[in-house]
Image 1: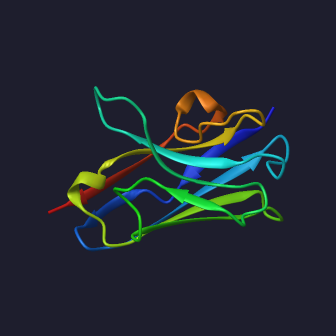
Image 2: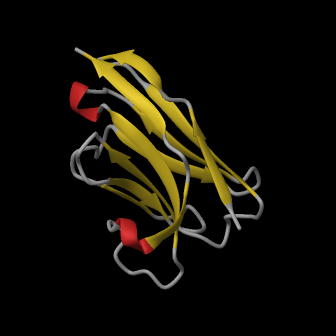
Amino acid sequence: QVQLVESGGGLVQAGGSLRLSCAASGGTFSPYGLGWFRQTPGKERNYVASISRSGDSTYYADSVKDRFFISRDNSKNTLYLQMNSLKPEDTAVYYCATRRPSAAIIESPGSYNYWGQGTQVTVSS
């Protein structure tokens, strides 16, 4: 069973940048598409970005397009999310996840099976 651990969260001022990492253990995640989601208290978990197994294809929520960039290094079993031009509304707990091979809806949390524990990102105004 793949285990995922996120890191890189923290407190940053609006306009700043952070780079999140998601490291896999207990197996390789190269066979999986991968995604980032975020969640604020009392709200549902929302899609942020996803990447294909090879890393050739990337997809983004409209709210983060051209500011966030997802990438992966299969040799290191690590997923990344580079977040630039951060806004207070980006404040959330960020989660990485592996997508089920047969899942077609990449924006749906139900399409993902293994999840990390999350890392807090707080953007001050």
